[in-house]
Image (cartoon, rainbow, N blue to C red):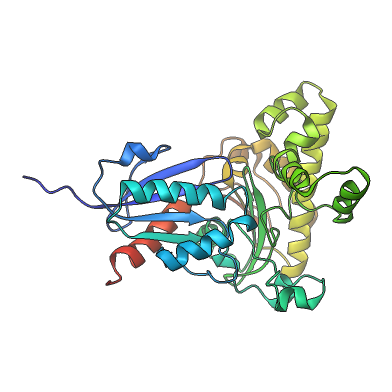
Length: 354
């Protein structure tokens, strides 16, 4: 009787999706993908890797999930209300399906854990940081880490992860020095349903003068803002783009605000870096919307950045779509969070002796 080959299952739970990836035991080859855990119930799984968005103050490196870790994860779930509770639910399902396999948590905040103090500490009362742990954590770190590895030739790098959630990072000599998401994944760029950065006094105003409860405000900022909130059409960039092309003024406005937030972020990060060697687009929107890349890059031409228009239109990641004479390379990279999670799971779940 042939013994089934053991494999690594990666569970990537996002704010609006669940992606499952089955790798060989060495975490080299992707065997198949899916969106339902039950599809993999009959696989001989050696270890399971889980993406957790928020690691809080205690988790910066991948970790085997035991009772202590599980208790700690439950305590910080509120820091990423769209993500961590969902990841915890899928973890429980996976644990039921694969009770004998080690389960590994890999954290989106890990890549940004060692941000410089000036980048991670908010200009609020210092005690909020020193006593309560309120700091910039940064998110999409697994994606940013992968893209940094693919663009390692660039000493000064800005990465734009644009999907349902959107974030940017400034990378200098392989290390992040700034990132747009903060204490939670709500800060920074305009997103599909999240507002990104807004005046915090707005929250005080709507609570005090419009009688909105904290739960209502939280739902509005996370689920009814961004592209959806401004356009009134959809949270899907493609649908908003169609409406804008048909002349819908709110859809046009939504795309303008979205583009402005990216351009402003790239410009600010280029200043922090003292220049820019490469700009990366990744994530569902970043990888697939040539029109957005054009809009952003045209407005960055002042830094000597130029697109190859034909390469941009026909782009299939992974490619450099900058013009030959461009001072800044423009890369479209298909992010591989699943691969990095699989590698961490192999290291902890398979290679580490119990």
